[in-house]
Length: 220
Image 1 (cartoon, rainbow, N blue to C red):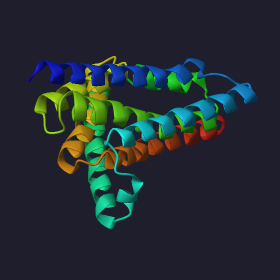
Image 2: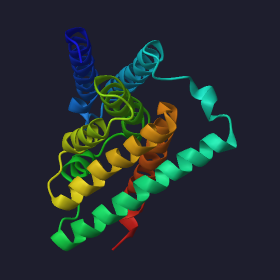
Image 3: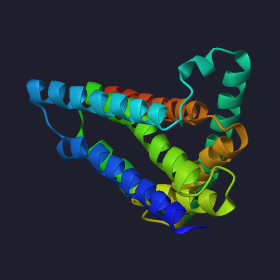
Image 4: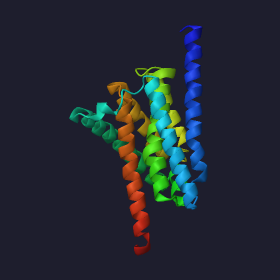
């Protein structure tokens, strides 16, 4: 590996860090109730998402969502989600044995009592797009390479770390999710598949959370 290659990889790492930092800015205001501020945060989050997609396209990390037009593509997305589901179930069982009911990250979201539109925008749209660009596209695909085992492990551990794990079970949930997405990216070489599997996973989690909040007054 020559000096120019090392510098280029380091710059990609800095870019990944910068993009992830920008994504975190709207989360400072999770609990806002003012309608105008909520609308502004939704707009900013969508803008960040669009910017991430544009950047990924310019860097050659996305082919475009036209790649999702086949049944084969959705089959691969389904397999990726199945991998996520398996590791998260294993992690959840370990959490139960540890006596941990929730992760720090999940608890922060639930305790903020976020506006539903903001919650959906942040967790179902922005997070999957930006996190897949950062952890799979840039870290695995550019800082290392998509076939690198070291890149797979490092990106998975970092993905787990940024979700603030507070137990071994939570580590398994998030690092395992990162590992499942990394395996899919390594196998299929399609960042779009990872984004959609991530969106499906977060959509199910958010739907369950909103349903529980809706039913909470009627549950004794």
